[in-house]
Length: 191
Image (tube, rainbow, N blue to C red; front, side):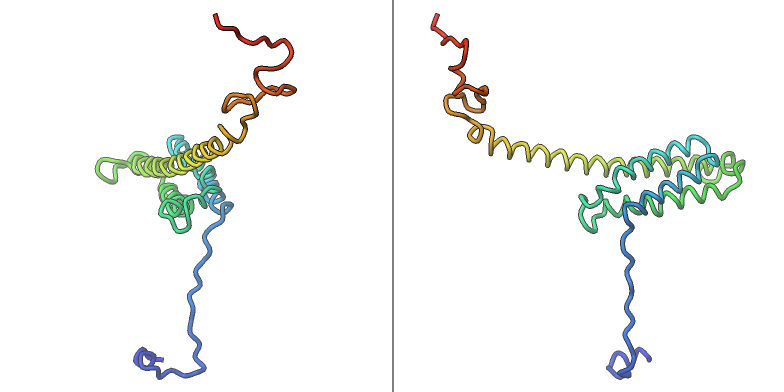
């Protein structure tokens, strides 16, 4: 059917509209598997400087993948973590691994840098970015923990756990009715 006919409703009734299927976001397992595969490909084939940087990114992604839901649906930070694991990291490392080692490690290709230097710069950038996102999520979790602690303190700290005869915010020892009573207790006398 031509676009002109669709525009003015001249299409046939038997024509079915096509829908675009949007793929589901990768699961935590798929994200982790992707970075593990990159690390496996790099190990033994790339210099230690590359492997160490890939390992750093992989460890942070391992830590972050189960916590991506804390970033919120559709967040830019969550997208960055997923894209790093499934696209940015694999593409950078694989492009480097396709090059002959001598060429990649010794031949200057851009602004005085070898392919190895360029890859290390890219991996440092990815690592720093992922670390910042991880820190932000951890800070948010810590703030939530502090807020919850303050809530509990307000709820139970001074009124909820105060027993008769005890000072606010303290508990009387078991078997006593308050801090002034109990075996061996002598009242304090004024000097």
